[in-house]
Length: 138
Image (cartoon, rainbow, N blue to C red; front, side):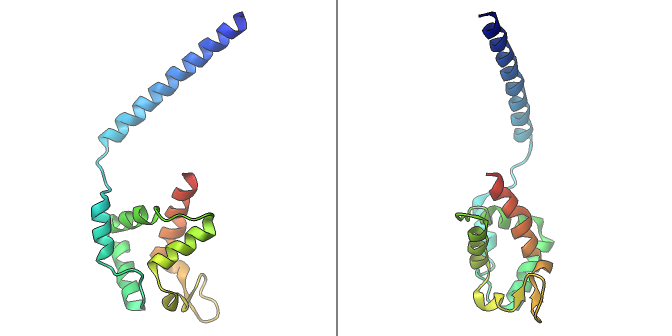
């Protein structure tokens, strides 16, 4: 019985520590400005017609997400809503939303066989850098 009382006190003290940490995190989150508004995201993405079907539009899109961190953040947030049964399915769905098959046939990941390297595009770092990490952490 004494052992149970000691264990219960340890659990209660651990809970207090966790609650203090949660309160601290909540205060930090309340102090941060809200960066994301879904309507802004949709408007920014609608300015570029998706899926992208030619290299000129792709370069314009690349310039937009490279030069404007808000556009990049909006793209990441919007694409995180696209899911799949596994990572490969999710990447395929993201790619289908962003680019047509006709455009992507000119690209390979590393640029082999005379194709353009996809890994050098900013959109690649968005997909593989942020989105997959965000989705795998959920």
